[in-house]
Length: 428
Image 1 (cartoon, rainbow, N blue to C red):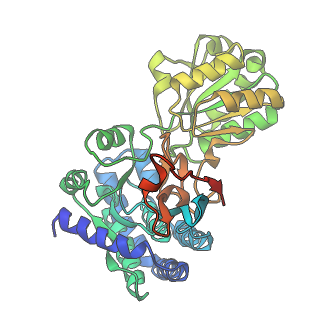
Image 2: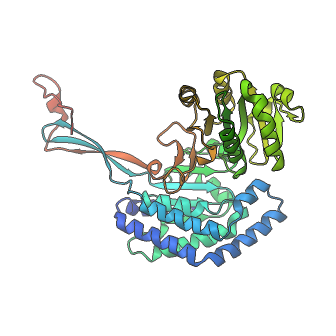
């Protein structure tokens, strides 16, 4: 089957999905969750083959970390799908209504985007996340995972489509998968049938997608996230948050890459951080001021501040004040997630207003920037765009809206020229 044929099938499926009942969609989602749990062994068997391939192919360690599955992760996949099923249906929501004139009303109502092309590297747990979000929001999806996860992805997609087949009225083409790199290039040309592309992966990968398609792209090319430890930070909180932001999952896009410290507190906190991070094998680099406090820090060159490590590596920057911290983060951050650790509420608000990122936080780990943790059920990806969806993109980011006008024979001619009728424009 050609990519055009796949896209056409997805488009036909999307037209059906757009007006499915909430109960029908939830029935399919619960079936998808159940079938994953019941087939844990077959998923892990396929994943084992992928891990062996990845190690032999010398795939980067961060990608291998994202690739590995276990029983807990598979249960987490099922839990994520059920979380999506439990959320309100985002389709058909009347967002606002207005009387244009007597017996002439305007309503803005949410509706699906249509067909989503989801392209991602490594993580097989992205398959059920993306599939469940698309189904609940009434969108058809064409999935493309990385070659390093092809066995896991194939088994998971087959299980999900088997689940869909058990629910009458759900089109089988609601979830489809492609496997080759050439099909990705073909997908990027299908602007007639594919309405949105969501890439998840490395900086170069996402940029390639953005630069080679006319289809709107939702995503982020980098996850350069910061912790800023303010002069009025609680040191115990600062240590806990910084360690979690970097170490809880270093390969994640919301892991901290740059640590920014106020100079008034640097001599107290940097030695403690160096000790704690050193125990975990983190390679630490520092600016000149930071190295005056701990000469054992490697020299951080200018380019380091713009690197997404996705690994046990961290750069430390000492700044004079909050304004310099905000300027530094806006210059070197990727607009993903940044946090301030402080006990001063005014400083917190100044930071959160000034930092130009999709998620800004106070006294919390950057690792909270996640669709499931935000209560979105799951996420199709994290967007640093400034369009209709930003940050972790859940169901609300997968619907758009249409305007519905209900009249009673009115024509525009009645509202122009001499003796023209006037619009009432009254909110309903």
